[in-house]
Image (cartoon, rainbow, N blue to C red):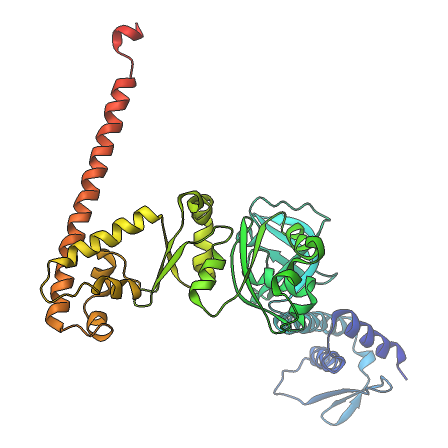
Length: 414
């Protein structure tokens, strides 16, 4: 019995997570290559067979049905067998790693930060596997030092130049989703469902949640007692702000929730344009828009609607201009403006963009009347564009004049 061989196969199988049968087949193939090397024969010139008993480890070899002693082949064939075996074990290990980690895409893994290669961080996931965290998948402003523990999500697994490349990410929105699954048991158990998620990594994330159990408050469960659960996630993300909002099947309610912490006064939704016009008071405008437009941008991605933010003054001005535009058209009733507002059309620009079909199909207008209304809207939109260009030019001239006034004269400079 060759128990040493069996023990070696078991150790390799356990350490490299390779199926034992594959290792035995690799050994048999390597010994066949060694025998061919010893006898100096090509593959089609003579038949060589090698079999390893999986129970005892006994090795039997035949050349043209005549038994040979594999142990007496010599040093050079043994070296050949060794090289073939190393290549095959490496190939099996690559296949094992690829198979294992391909099935784990989207999972969070723990690792240790290693070295940097051109901005990408190499992460040691185990004693045999490394992952790569590209610069583009690292959270902005976050720095990792060799030896630090790091958590990331498996984004992709590729085979490049006979090497398995495991791509990691800390910026992907699903990384947040997986963190919630780890920190909030109700999410894992599907009691709470994450319906939508929008993220700007390193800055802010909005998460819309819904409870499938009336007894469980979705937002409260995600926040945790005194914010314990959400604090763990925020700490993992280096202080990234996370807004947890309540999901609603009503687009208006969802948009209102998505724009929090701003308070919304009114929402007009235009299904034809996929656009929501949101009215907020002057003191809520900066909150609704957010720093560099971040709040409204994330709310738009969370809800799936283009969102325009207007103050009451801007909204009323837009509606008044719309009413003025269509007032002089014959056979147009006074209620038309209200009907247009009900469709989410609050300006002549919206009217120009939707065209005449919704006016005919939704409001029951005659095609000729609808065409006349759209023509009037196009003309008014052109006037608005000209006014904007004129105001822009005037503002530019004012700035240039102010610069000239502020510039010291030559005499003053002297």
